Amino acid sequence: MRRFPEPITNLVATFSRLPGVGPKTALRYVYYLLKQPSHDLEVMARALTQLGERIGTCPRCFTYTELETCFICQDPKRDPSILCVVEESRDISTIEATGQYHGFYHVLGGSLNPIEGMTPDVIRYRELEERLKAEEGIKEIILALSPTNYGETTIMFLQKQLAPLGRSFSRLARGLPLGATLEFADEITLGEALSQRRSIQ
Ligand SMILES: [Zn+2]
Image (spheres, rainbow, N blue to C red):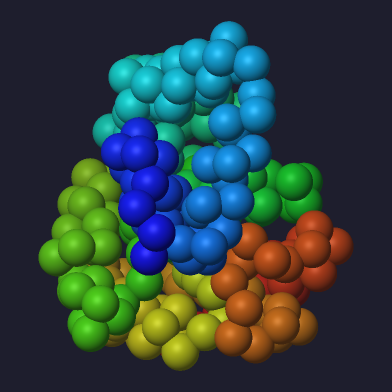
């Protein structure tokens, strides 16, 4: 590869770490940025810094938040008897957009995938178990995981491990595109999958 000035090489390496971005695309981004006024670059750099400084995770549901506890966990109008378990924070926005769900959430931070290092200790399984033990008011747990192999494995694992706690489990109805993650589901399909959720034993 051609030798570039160090700032270019550094940024190409940084962008290449983003999902779906290879070195060629990264270089294209860098050339685009080089054409922008330096003030715009500062604004962008500040936005990135603030992401690291101001966003943390909610201690209750583990979604990303700027607050001490996220606004959903703080909402007294939500139904405390249902807990929706999702893989990623971004899944919460997808589910909220359906307008079909009014309970609380638990973010696992991924699905089981031992080859990639996603073991039960890495996904927030223990935290979920602790929460269920502490919050007896939770009656139903919706395992709203993506219809992928990893999502299926995770559903089976959680249901088996948490069964002794005596809660009812449900999962999203079929109709979601198989193999795709929830972030690509449209609101109507996901809303139906939620409202027609199936109970599992
Ligand atoms: Zn929260």
